[in-house]
Length: 193
Image (cartoon, rainbow, N blue to C red):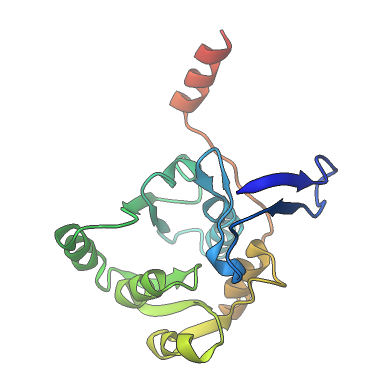
């Protein structure tokens, strides 16, 4: 539970502290959400932009948890946004895995979790991802063709994602892409009258 945010305002780039209780002692287990959307999805857009600028003809798709896809809908750098339930039943999961199996030349895991790593390994003929370099996590290094150490304490999410671009020899474009569709603009106009 967040009890307060310090400072309450500041210019872009200001470090913000979330003060409260019930946080995990392992920061990678805590998630920050704005209006119900996990910030990691939006913070993936600089990497997506970097890949699209490096390979403009490439088809780039994203796989995100259902309910977070709105952040990416309308993103000009993406061809398709796929979703998976946070807790899929066996049949839904099996169908997703079958659809993903070696579908892509390259698959990236931007989150060092078990499922994102497995999805990247299954989906790509080549896979790269973020891995926490701890004994219990090193099995992921074996699955991935290439991995980048993930430091959730000292490295901002955007920098961690862009480290994947660097590992691929792609120039980093540190630009968060906020996009919307015509229907989103119409909904806002309707709300504002």
